[in-house]
Image: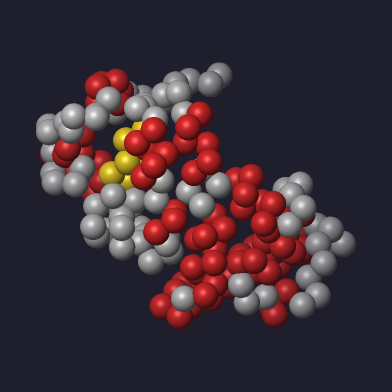
Length: 172
């Protein structure tokens, strides 16, 4: 929702250092692979000295995708500012105890202002949502997810419930 806030949290909190390290190792590996596949296209000098998302995004993500720097990339690609423009029923699920998301990432005001946005913030769940389990819980009407199928809240948009299990539209 807010890439800058999330990146700061990952870069600064000691509890996130293991994940940050593993993720950066993965990103650095991808840059090395691209460097070998496309010699001369990427400058890999100092690649292994990168220690933060800001450093990686400033050096690779932003320029490779047409952004001025990490701050520009994060500002233009964060979804939170776009929530007022949503015109289709949308469900956002994000656990309050996600270690990568500080409080300012949760779009409470934006969801409240747009009747098409339903924000569900369970107390627990962490960062990774298990897709198969979430789908099972939705169908089974389990607590935390079942509210969308069996116990609608007053603000809940009925079009969201009606389209929840519809296949995505075809683009071609």
